[in-house]
Structures are given as C-alpha cells and as structure tokens.
Amino acid sequence: MLGIYSWRRQPDKDAHRAGLADPALRPAVAQCLRSYAKMAAISAVLIWTGLSLFYGAVYQRTIRAHHITLHVIDLDRGAVGANVTRMVLDAKPADAAPTWARKDGLRSLEDAKAWVLRHGWGALVINPGATSRLYAAVRDGADYDPAQAMTAIESSGRQVVAEMMFASPAVVATAQRVSRDYSVAFLAEFQRALPQAPPQANYAAIVAPVAFTTVDVAPAGFSLSPIMSTFGYLVALFCAMCALLPWKLTSFAFFARVRYRDLVLMWSTLILCLALVLSLYQALAFLVFRGPDFDRLALPYTPASFFKLWFTCAAVVLAFALWLFALFLLLPPYLLALPTICTVVTNVISTITAIELAPPFYRFLYAMPFFNGSNIALHVITGAHPDVRREVAILVAEIAAMAVFLAFSVWLRRLLVQHGLSDPQGWYRGQTYFRLPAPPPSPTPKPAHAPAKMGP
Image (cartoon, rainbow, N blue to C red; front, side, top):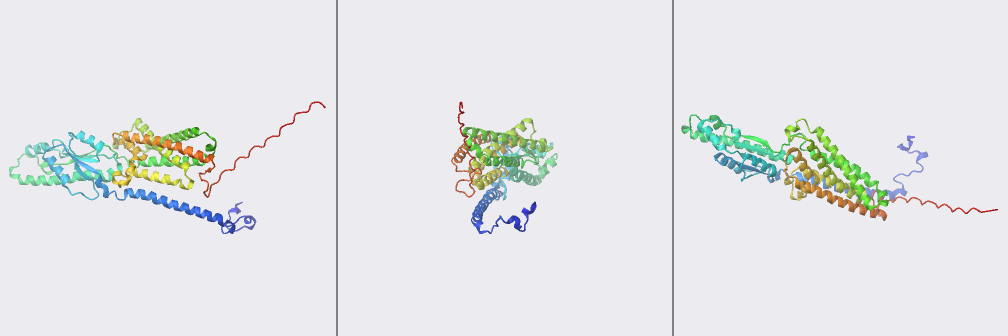
C-alpha cells in the first residue's frame, strides 16, 4: 500500500509516471522554476523591507535620546532652587541622554505633576519652601527632612520602553548627582563660615542639605507593561489573518452570484464579529495574567477597565482586518505577505520605541492603529495620556476609511470575477497559475410528451 512512496523505482507502478528530467516536462518545469524564482525575489524584497523598517527605526535611538526633553521646575524660588537649577542646566550633556530645560509658570507640586502627566517625560522639582526649611535647620536647629527638598517626577506610562531606557534613569541619576554635589558645596561653604556658625545648628542638615523623593504620575511597573498592548494586538491580528485568508480563497462563488450590497454587508459584519471575539479573548487574557501586584504598580483594575481594553482592541483589530482583507481580495497569492509584513512591522515599531527617537521618516507612525490603541490602553491602565480624544478620533477615522476601501475592493473583485479575469485563488488572466473553474453542465432539456391519442 505504501509502495507508491518508495524511493526506488517500481516498474509496475512507475510506468505511467515521468521524472523531472523527462524532456516532455521541461516546459512545465521551466515555467515553475521561473515562478519560484519570482517568489524568491519577492521574499527577498519582503525580508529586506521588513528588517530595514524595523532596524532603521531603532538602531540609532540612543544617539537621538536628546530628542527627549526633561524639565527642572523651581517652585522654591530661593537659594536652593536657584543653585539646583543651575547645577542641572549647566551640566555637560552626556551622550545617549535626554536634554534638560527649565519650566516656569507652575505654582505647586500638584501643578507640576499634572503638567508632566499631560506633556512631559519627567521632571526634577525643587519643592516650595526648600530654602526656608534648610536655613531654619542651620540657623535654629529645627528638624529637617532633606527628602522634602526635591521631587523626581516620572511618567512610566507615557511610553514604557523609552521611559524605562532613557527618561526615568536620567531623572533619578540627575537627582542623585545634584544631591551629592550640593551637599559637598554646602558643607564647604559652612566650613568657611564655621566661626560664625550658630551653636544650635542642625548638623545633619548641613551634611545632607538636599535629597529627593520619587513620584510616578503614570505608574506602569507591572511585569506586562512593556509588551502588553503590542503583543496582544499582534496575536489578535495574526488570528484574524487565519480567518481572512480562507475567506478570500473560498469566496469565488459569492462574487459570481451574490449582489454587491449583500457582499459588502456580509464581509463588514463578519469582520466586525471577528474583531469583537478576538479582542474579548485578548482582554480576558490580560485580566488573568496581569499579575498579583498590578493594583499596586498601576491604576486599580475595574470592570470599566476591562470593557475599555476590550473595545480598544476591537477597534484596532477591526481597522487592521478591514485593511488587510480589502488588499487580500485584490492581490494575487504571491503578494499577500507584502501588506502583512509592512503593516505588522510598522505598527510594532510604533509601540516598542518612542517615535521621537526614530528618524523623521517615521513620523507617519503617529497614525498607526497600534500606536493609538496602545496610548488608549496605557491611559486606561496607568492614567498616562489624559486626553485620548485624538487617538479615538484617529481610530474611528481609520475604521471608516478602511470600510470604504473594503467596499471598493469588493466591487472591483466582483467585477473581475464576473468578467472572467480572476480565478478562485486570486490569480489574474495571463499569470502562470490562472485557472477558471469549469462551468457546471447545463441540464439536458426533457423531450416533450406527445399528446395521448383518443379513440382506436
């Protein structure tokens, strides 16, 4: 029974078969080899395009770290505030480090937190009254807590990877350096004025005049934060493609026989249901695996958070599925991977690195569904990006535009099928593998029965 798969020639079974070297097969073999060479060339273009897009966005991001701006905010408006601000701004910029700028116009620490949450990557704040508290401790021996002098503000949820690699370490390192340098300078100044020093001075304040506390206005310290939205959307997208490809390959009969309006409504409804189901699974997976310390390292997770994450993922998958299926309907099989690779790579880039750290060419990533969906998810989970109206508007506009594009693709695919220019697999007339199915045989008309004779 298995002899047909034998490696050795079997005369009784191989007599009617030909080998690849048979002269009769040379035209077919040459045609297949040309087709395979074309596919290999397309694969080379695909891998070069995908890797170039990805590596081009991230390979010099340390050099562009100066595009991230951190701020020093002087709420003290005294000697401590002026000296700390000068130390921060006069320091020589380090390679692969963010730049510092002064931010004025804020009146309280809460105002500074709100500003960083909405606009900033991070800030070092000299708290109100830092000078008066320090001098009261030196002059009168009052109790003194050096950690009340400065506040290092982080915003981990703004862009988790960039904050983790550049912004947060720079804020903390600068605060530590300023604390050390200011302590050395203040102690040296006190030693020069030692004969006039009051005997009741708080010497602990002299040795450690300034320190800092750290506040994260958009906490994203839970373990899934760097990959939560990126990987969730990516898996949902690949699962959607598992349905979109068979739909394209098995829909020939629909385009040949079904009305255009019904086709558009059918595909739109199916894709919407697919997006809702896949996004529900993604939201449930995050609910299960978010971690036991999630509520301590992020905002409390509530039923509203679940539904917001569900519908955000549904919007992202819906925009993608409409876009990809519209392209799948029009592209021949050997080009189906092209929009997939380009779409997936560009969207992944938009979430794993800050767009500010990429070359100017990548500014179009601000319109990617992954980017906008990830910002909405970070807003729900961490409180970052307090105003997500722009992200919501972009997603809605993309869904509407992709729905229109799908309607056009359905119309064009239906036209091509009805005119015999495209086959069930999507090959076009004139291509190597173009094959139209044989039309069904028309029924043979039955002969008419002769009327029965009356009488003899």
